[in-house]
Image 1 (cartoon, rainbow, N blue to C red):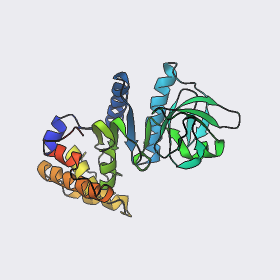
Image 2 (cartoon, helix red, strand yellow):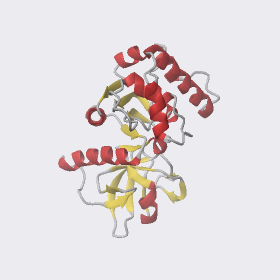
Image 3 (cartoon, one colour):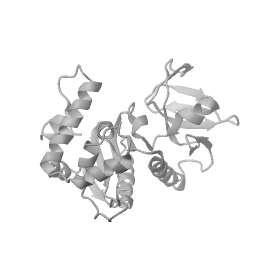
Image 4 (cartoon, rainbow, N blue to C red):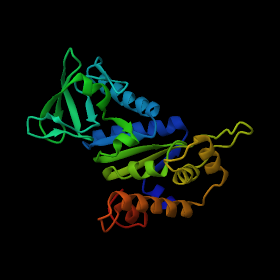
Length: 271
C-alpha cells in the first residue's frame, strides 16, 4: 500500500521547492553517513539545479575548487565527484580496466586542454580522459538524469518525481540504491489553460507517472489525463508494483525475485 510505503520514509511530497529541498537534504544526509548517493530527475534543467546546488555546498566547504571545465553544461573542477556516461575501451586505467558508462570518479587534476585526471571511487585505478570525452560524457555525480542513472548503483538513491516522470523513470530511479531509495514528489498544480487545478497529492502525481509511458508524445496530455482521475492509494501501490515487475522482467529476465516488488508487499530487502 502506498501509505505504508510512505510510512517507511520512501516517499515525501510537497511543492517543487520543497521536493528539491528534500532531495538535497537526502544527499547531504547520505554523505554525512559516509554512504554513496545519487540524485536523479527526468530533465536536464532540474538535474543541473540539483547538481550545482550540491557542488556549491562542497565549494563552500572548501572540498572542491570553484573554477573548472565545462562538462555536460556543468562546471567540473578538482575535488568534484563525476560519473562517466559512455563506454570507451581506449581509455585504460592504471589498474588495467577501462572507462565505463556509470563509473564514478573523483577529479584529481585538470589540464589546460580540458582533460581530467580521474581516480576511481570503486578502486579501479586512475585514468586521464581527454577534453573531447569530458565535454559530452562526464557529468557531476551528485545528480544525473534518470537516463544516465541507468548504469549506476549506489548505497542510496533519490528520485525527483514531477509531471515529466514516466513509469520507466520510476523503475530506474527507485532501484539504483542498494540500501535505500527515496521519491521526492513535486506536487504542482496543473493548469490546462481553462481552469486552475488544485495541487495534486503525492498519490496523484505517482499515479499519473505510472500511467505515463516513455513513448508518450505529449506531456500536456499526460498531465491532464493523470490529474483528471485520481487513484486510490492501494490501487496506485499495486500499479507501482506491477510497473516495477514489468520493467524488472524486461531488464533482468533471469532473476527469480524482484526486490522492489517484494518490498512493496512488506517483505524483502530495503528499496
